[in-house]
Image (tube, rainbow, N blue to C red; front, side, top):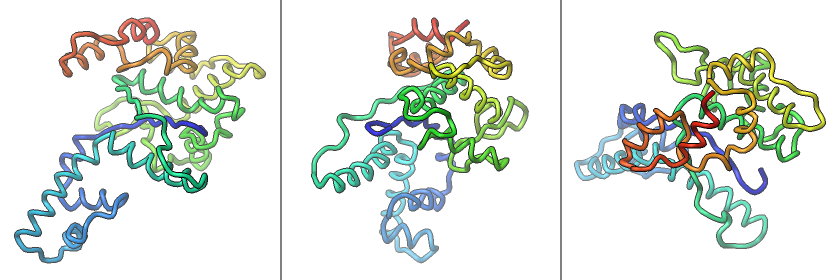
Length: 258
């Protein structure tokens, strides 16, 4: 969107925890300069004891930053702000405030939030179809699906749960595209639309009635202010953080359960 952005992020802390020291630096160097010593370490050049200690300190810091959402948002927002200020020939704060984040606790919450974000341009009447919705993941997924592929920069859809489950979203990419297309047609007042059988199968699997789905995908930001998920997941999340109140429990129970 022209004045804000939405990002659905999966933080794979376990994977980062098991990265070799060299792998941490390689990942860091993809987005940041690093230091002369970290580049020498990656190249396998000899370092003295003091230099190795300095590199190890950097590795520990980078490993933490690579799974830190605040650091990710800072890295994402800063270049946008610099470019905008340069175009406007001004200085100062570009973003109005600090970003807001919500924990998505189960696959129903993840899929609902993804569809809400992907349908942003259609709700705002900036686009008429998902494939014409610029700067969205659904547009990238559709363009890749036409070639029989999935975009490498996005978490893939990997189908139904099974043994040796790969890392990804537990649906088929085709079903998700159809679900977003069906939902987008219903949202658009000038188009005839209905939830198809394949989309209904997904909603049944998620235990979300169709009318609830339409409410969620048009008002996600207004309905949910904290963590989002079914009540057992929300309870476990709050206990883990030692929170006495389950913020938003009523809306989670009302809209994410049949």
